[in-house]
Image 1: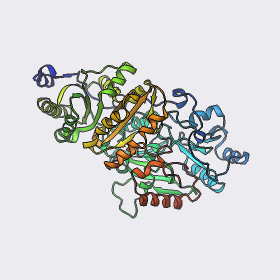
Image 2: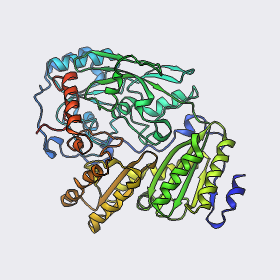
Image 3: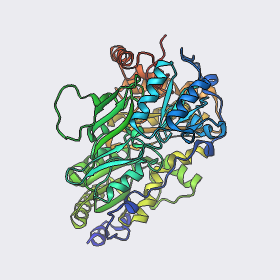
Image 4: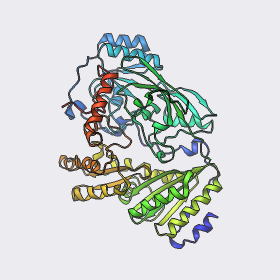
Length: 527
C-alpha cells in the first residue's frame, strides 16, 4: 500500500516509518517534550524591570502588615508566599529578561476568594498581577514593580465534562496537558496544543488568546471558548459561563476577557468546546527547494487532505541546522533549504492513509517536494515534532537571542511570509550569527529569530523598529499569538489605529477605573 506507492518515486522517495495501530489516548498524542521550565533554572537573575526599562510606577499603595493580615485571614498562611527565594521564579519571566519585585503571592482556590482579594486591593489601591503557569514570552505574567501576584495554581478543578456535546467546564488554573489528559478519558481533546502544555494554565491561554500548532484545524480560542467567568477589579463576578454553542443574547462579553491578558478582569472559570480525539495520526516531514514550493504544497494540502489536515508547519534550513548543531537532534532527511511538517488526524487510519498517499504522490510527481519521510508510530512522531518545538531552546546556545528583548512573533500575509526573513538577513549582514524563520505556515504566523555572540545595542537598534515597520507595511500583525504584555505594549500602533487604541483605553477605564489589573501591560504608555 503506502510503501508500494511511494516506491514509485525512486531515489527521492519518502521513507515511510512503521505504522502505529492507534494514537488514541494522552500518552501518545500529547507526550511532546516540554520546553518551558522554571525561569530560575533557565537563566541567571536579571536586572529589575523597573531599572532596565524606562517605566514609571503608577499611583498605587505599597503592601503593609495590615494587608498581609487580611490576606492571611482570608486564605490561611500556607496559601500566601512572602519568602524572597520562593518568589524569585514568580517575579521573573521564562526568558529571564524581565523581573519584578513583588513581596507577596496569593493562591486562591475559588472565584469567591479572587473576588474578595480584588475588592480589597481595589479599595486600598494595591496593583495586582494575575499569573498562571508563567510561560509567557512578552512579560505579561510577571510584576513590573511590586504588584500583588495572584496565582491560579490551586484553581485546577474540572467541574464537568459533557461527553454528548463535548463541552468541558473547568477552573482557569488547570494545566493544559492535565486538562487534555482528563478529557481524553471521554474521547475528547482540548483544541489547543503548545510546547509549554506541561506548565501553562488554560486560563492564561485564554487570557492571551494563545494560538499553537493546530489553529489551522480548530480555529482560535475566540471560537472554542463558549463561556467565561471573570472577576472585575471591583470584585464583581461576571458570569458569562454559557455552555451553549448558540447564544445570541446581547453583547458577547466573554470576548473582552479572551486576549486582554488580565487587564480587564481575571478569568476564573471557562467552558471549552472540545472536539473528538483523533484515533489515527500521520506526520509527514518534507524537504523543498523553494518557498514558492512551500506555498504551493500548503495549498495542495488544504485541497487534497481537507478535513484530516490538522497542522502545517514551516522550518527554514538555518532553524533546523541550529537544532542539529546545538541539541544534536538528527533530521530524518537530507539537507534542504525549506522543510514542512504536515500532520493529519482522523477517525479512520485506512481512509487517512489513502488521502495522504494521494497528496504525497501529487506533490512528489510535480517536483514541489524532493524528499521526505512519513511517521505514524508515536515515538517517531514525537522525534519529528521535537525538531520543530525545540528550535527556541536550541537558539539559546548560539549566544544572545534578540527575541529575548521583544518576541518577534508576527503574522504576515503568505506571499510576504519568508521575504521578511530574507530582508532582515540582508539588512543585518555579518553582524549576527543567525537570522532564521519558522512557524505556523497554516495561519501565517512567523517566528523570526536573530542571534549574535553577545548582546549589542547597535544590532537591536537595527532590528527595531525596522521589523515592526516592515510588518505594518504589508498589513501584518506585530503579535500573532503571544500578546503584547509589557514588552510590546508601546508598539501597538504598528497594528492598531489611534481610534482603536483610544477605545481600548476607554474600556480599561470603565472596567478598571483605578488601573490595578496588570498595570503597564497591553496598552501603550501615555505620552
